[in-house]
Image (tube, rainbow over all chains, first blue to last red):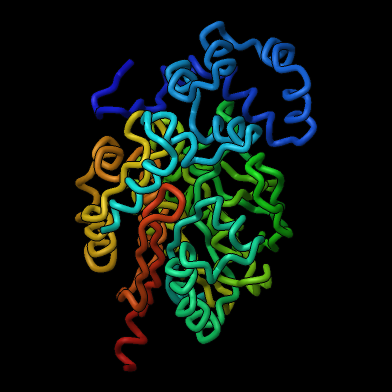
Length: 112
Length: 286
């Protein structure tokens, strides 16, 4: 995986190909019925979209970095995160290994 | 003939939609951002635009990654918004101007921009939030021509290409025979990164440079590659491409009449600018 900007994975053709099934599942979460179906039976829902083992494991463990490594695009992953009531500060904290309070403080500090 | 009165660029972070729904405009967290719109409201009331051409990027509402256009121009009489799965309230639909859309489309293709034409197009928060910020209560008094730029899946169009896309749109609008007052909108940015171990990246210095150069010497920004933009403004800071296209469409003499910059709104350096566009004839008359 090309990662010449530290901590950044370019969502390029390689990632887009790898992530198609996962991103398609997340795209389906534009519909409230689909969000409910996922919550009702996550295993079956993931199977229906043909997630790879790597993608399924990342979704199961709620690992955002894992989902990105498996080709997930953050705009689509945010729709999945929304199902669990997580916003972009929550997933930012998870990805950077900080608490949400620490992550918010880092953002605020960038303005000072 | 149609006249381009100027442009507004603003951040389009989804949580702004929630803040509006929850009436948090005067909360200490939100106030520094929302008060930046007082001038915008005054300017819109004074300038009375009829149409807004809106450069934005879709985040997976109208377009999925199965078929993703680099540039897409709306040609609908009405643009609907829908559930994006992020808990933002769905806004009411926005009127289009198909005749102006097709005029722009014809001119873009004649200018060798091979765009996608959309007679049906859902518009996401990147259109509806800026519209609601400019016209609170969804009381928008303009019709729109939405133009979407791919800022999601690399390869993205270059900074130079987006500036030139805007210039082509600007020339098209200026040659439109109807008496219309047209404003140009660019949405998104400024620096932010949502994904990866670098999530939370913000670059105040680079944002200031971009806003400074945008007014009088936008060509200077074409030296940045997309890779440079990701590095300097974050993985999602590339939404600045929408600002470049907006600036390109201002074909006359441009001056900045308003700027508001505040960190952070959500994970983003939030910015709002108003640029006025004065053409030759106006300058001579003044």
